[in-house]
Amino acid sequence: MLQPAISPSLMCADIFRLREIIDVFEANGIEYLHIDVMDGQFVPNFCLGTDYCRRMKAGASIPLDIHLMVTEPEEKLKAFPFGPGDFVSVHYESTADVTGALNAVRERGAAAFLAINPDTPETVVLPYLPLLGGVLLMTVYPGFAGQKMVEGSLEKITRTRRLLDEAGRPDCRIEVDGNVNYEKAPLMRRAGADIFVVGTSSVLGPGDLNGNIRRMRRLLAEA
Image (cartoon, rainbow, N blue to C red; front, side, top):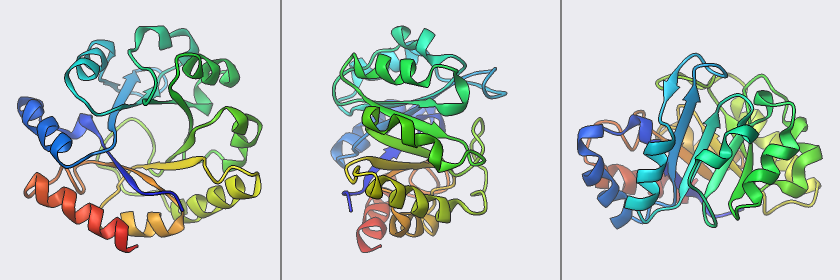
């Protein structure tokens, strides 16, 4: 199984303490910074845009994990700052040209992830496996923070891991996004996930940020 990594969701971070929070992430070896981009069309909400990504790319040493919840992402990727070491997720449901969107990410040296909604079967990833660095499984419906995990998500993680392994892609990562709390993260890990998007239900919730990160790392290591 691939080593677990933590990718805090910056939409859940206190904007008035953002520099302090990034410093703590860097000191604790946080692997990725998850940036949710929403256009009000693919999802009924607006969130973090191109300038936010640009400033984060310039001001933090941690690679970006850009989650594009936008229609026709292949037409918009050029506005975002990313490159080698970064991840960019595009939604299967957001475009008629999935291959074009994934290749546009890869052409700039970043790892292309295919995100799928809770109601989308994991088998849709099969035609795109040669292009993928990972699969982003939404364990809540995209667009809003604070939701509960959709029933059947753990089983879907297990099926996805099996599908990837049987297709000869044990290196293809599984990222999980939605209600990744201290109780569910170990279950997701045992099911086969290895990148964990954390927010207000765990690392960015109440308590000391350093202690929260250490707690999550311990739980994932013990799972």
